[in-house]
Image 1 (cartoon, rainbow, N blue to C red):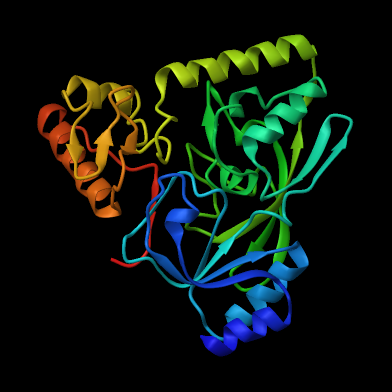
Image 2: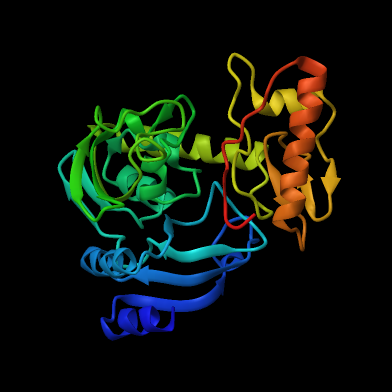
Length: 302
């Protein structure tokens, strides 16, 4: 690993760290270290990074802002690539925007609203990055990324690069082709928005933001929604009806505000969260016969 680290540093691909705690890079504020942590400073440097990783058969995965993610206490084997600064560019061409994977989705929705462009209002409270949000088809308030995406620029595991259209992304509820069928990293996205009334757009965004503040526990470290909605049921409602709101294991607690959020109350461990997830699954299944599936992505050593 030392030789790989030196190669990457010699190429000046960006930030290169060894045994970096991932609690520093996830919204849950928990998770063990990555053997190798890389934050490329550009798309070109990401390509250089991936070339070295492939040549040395290093296992890898990518993250954005670390939301919707639970990293095990034992950390990550191989390389963890963070898409952040250097992949946070933004170009606005009338109602079409081209944006880097590292751009904050909340910041993007604010910037776009000021231009009087509609379509991103739903994203005003989603604490992720553009790349991660496209990857998992993030959504809220009756809309999601598939509604506005025109195409995504993707780096695949074999090093090839390609633009995938919305149809080729094979979006469905909180999923895309990139998760299992054809694994890859979103580097850029092109969104098609709609010109609208600036005041109305800002007002709708503020309404969405206020709703999240009133109903969701973003004052404590959390990963967003833990479970997928087993439609026609809603995960948070099932957890509440099962009497589990406020239930704790170690430093992890089901939020008293919303049943589909688990918060880190202080020094919570990933093991606490995993135990709480299993407890919810067992309880809801026992009471309602409904199998709960996680929306949060769980990664790292077992």
